[in-house]
Length: 96
Image 1 (spheres, rainbow, N blue to C red):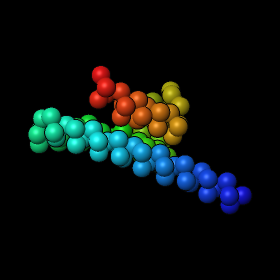
Image 2: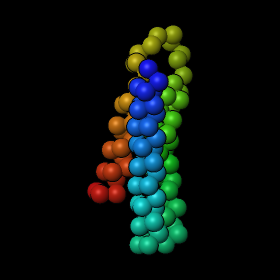
Image 3: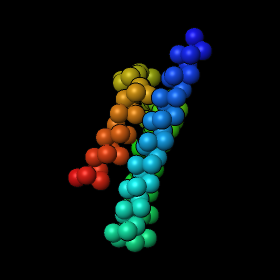
Image 4: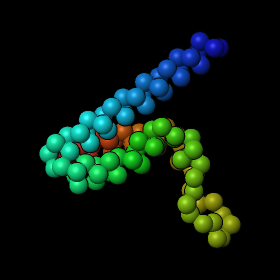
């Protein structure tokens, strides 16, 4: 049991580090190409997707919609879904 938890923890840590390094590369490339302004814009662009990879369980529980009618119309997003969307943004935005 502990071995399975260790492997899962190691995979999550690897994913977090890979995403952070990729974002640092994009921000560094933005600084090299456009200076401070583009680097700041790139950092702000990747802040939310990086947070979605680092804290997916926390962000999956956040519901900014106000439930005025008392009914639940949509299911909350899963942590895996948030991580997938974050990877699409981190990889797809700079390449587009």
